[in-house]
Image (cartoon, rainbow, N blue to C red; front, side, top):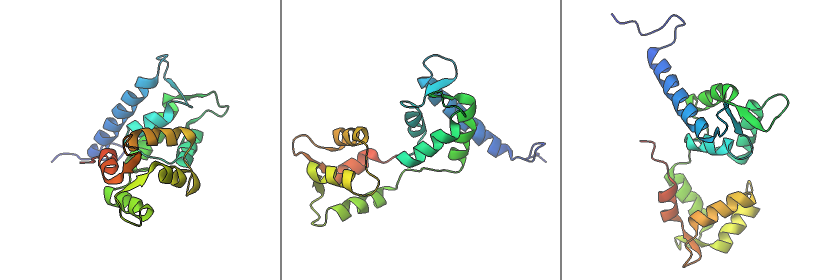
Amino acid sequence: LWETKDAEGEEWGDRLVIAEFHKKIKDAFEVFDHEANNTVDVRFEIGTIIRSLGCCPSEGELHDLIVEVEEEEPTGYIRFEKFLPVMTKVLLEKRYRPIPEDILLRAFEVLDPSKRGFLTKEELIKYMTEEGEPFSQEEMEEMLSAAIDPESNSIRYKDYIAMMVVDDG
């Protein structure tokens, strides 16, 4: 019979999953490790790395993650050794998963009570800045540039959702 557990009692399959996560995290981290010294700039790159790994934390959740991986005396940089275990745990726990397509559609439909199938740029800006957790200026500009059709100056939200949704397959 095959042994399915190692000396520490961990399943071999779990170890393979963890090894795969470690490789993905290292590969994503290295893209932004410009000095090749196992550090990345906390302000510009950490959110991009986390999102490139399929996680979609809110700004508040991202801030909490940064606090967790920062040094006692913040240097402005995150070290790979501190980032790896925290990010591995996030991936194992499937935290910050993207919102499913049907829920996104229902959310847009709530903002579009007359069921036009689109929101104007002005409506979208109003919702993004005045409702719920407000978007930062940078987040708003990023979303508008990706979402707004320049010809109609509106967002056809079904098309936008189809473009945004990550296929977990």
